[in-house]
Length: 47
Image 1 (cartoon, rainbow, N blue to C red):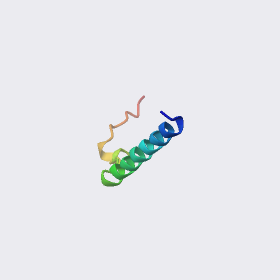
Image 2 (cartoon, rainbow, N blue to C red; image 1 turned 180 degrees about the vertical axis):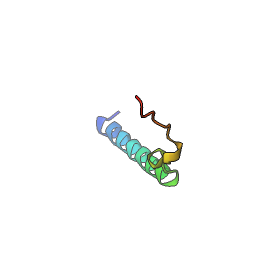
Image 3 (cartoon, rainbow, N blue to C red; image 1 turned 120 degrees about the vertical axis):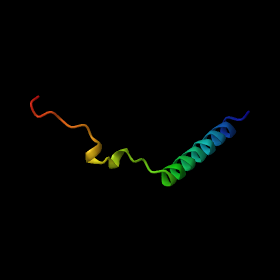
């Protein structure tokens, strides 16, 4: 197979994967960065 054809297919696959990843992030935002302070474990001030 031609090396340029393989490189083109690889680039297209990477673009499709990146597009699917961005779409998934847009539909399902990651919530770990918006943690509720009440859900965090309490720190012991004596330590």
